[in-house]
Amino acid sequence: MPAITTAYVKNIIRRCFSEIVDPSPNRRGVEAIWRHFDNRCAYCNRLLNRAAKEGHIDHLVSASGGGANAIGNRVLSCSSCNEKEKLDKPWEAFLKFKSGSDAEFVRRRQRILDWRKANPLCEGSELQEAATFARAQAEQVIAVFEKGINAATKRRWAN
Image 1 (cartoon, rainbow, N blue to C red):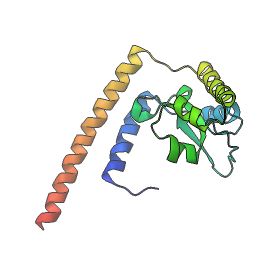
Image 2: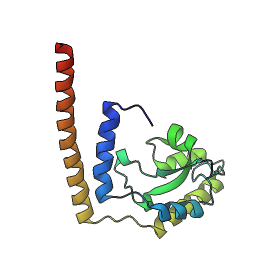
Image 3: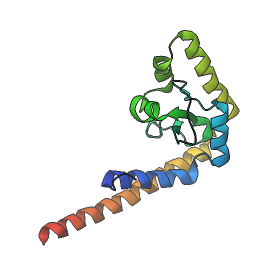
Image 4: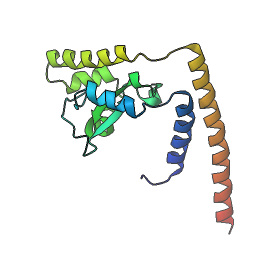
């Protein structure tokens, strides 16, 4: 578990509110992702050992970039691609960088597009409205949290 910092807590608050209206894939969805990508990283094609917990369920479009948690915005990724290399880069540009040839890029891109076609994102106005509301509520909770942190810090320095 990472160190509990103010930034970490704020991130958890945002994720919790987001998860209510835009849930992450369930166990069955994760199984489907592993099967579709044949236990391979969608970007570099590295074979992943699920028992060794080598795979990550990555956002194609990052959550910070407005990407959904929904299964259609998720792919199987190795830790290096997910944690160190891709970050918030556009997925197609990153995939092009990771592919050894144009033919390999086209093949990997098509596998991702097939996944997205089979798992379309729900993009209705009600979902957008709910997501906007959830983000606003999270920011209100964070504002209260920050006031509490500031008050506690002042009390500590006063003593």
